[in-house]
Image: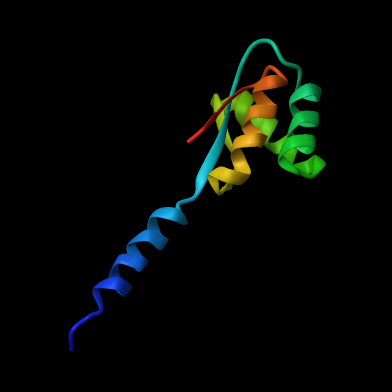
Length: 91
């Protein structure tokens, strides 16, 4: 049974466009726990508990993935974290 080349091409496009991206927050010696927690709640829609856990992971491990999703969703969130003087990257 032969496969439809158009169907195979569409499957490849779907795989490429559905790739999850991540916002990775890095530790710094500047920002307070309260500032980091408040930013995670405001810009990443974290609960207080999630934000506190991420802040501690960043502090003790040096970095933490704080949000996953599509590039379109994460790019403005990451930009907001950067504008708030946090050390974040979108990967």
